[in-house]
Image 1 (spheres, rainbow, N blue to C red):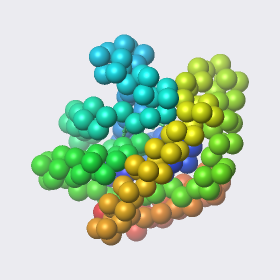
Image 2 (tube, helix red, strand yellow):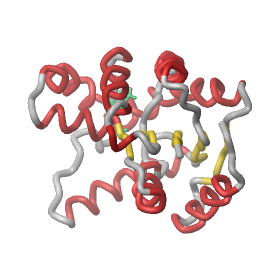
Image 3 (cartoon, rainbow, N blue to C red):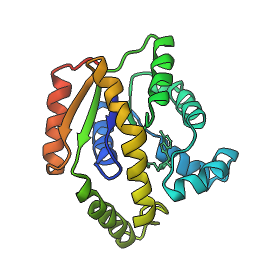
Length: 197
Ligand code: AMP
């Protein structure tokens, strides 16, 4: 199962990805998580990405494409993976197409979580509160200013990614405003239909 989850920040991609990894036994490949790990480890990539991420901008395509190409080549991704937060630009989507074509791999589904953008600000504020309550470190970019920039980046640079997959009839959408369980069911429904992207 090779799957892409699309949707703005706070749409629930991470939540659904975690559930799908358990259901299918395949890894969640989150470029956000990988970049945060690079920042924490102070690698050269992390040093480059940190300020961009904190401000809510997008890290350059060549960096994230390099990260994902390496990750997809790892043994645990051979049976499939869930891409969460990648691709975020059309250039990234085209690079992914090329990487997969070279490996003669296809995508089983590209699923977009559609959400009311006005509700996202509240979700992000809630996420910050929940993390704080759980004693976890709140993400540096889960604040109103950075969030506005992340949403802007999504609108201008990531919305065309949906069109990229829609053009080839590969895009499916799910109502991301529904309760988590209902969203999960809708995704399961699409996957059991054997959607082949
Ligand atoms: P996320 O955890 O997916 O919300 O990502 C957090 C931040 O990491 C984003 O706001 C970007 O700064 C950066 N990032 C994650 N994935 C990508 C990507 N595919 N392209 C560019 N920047 C990314």
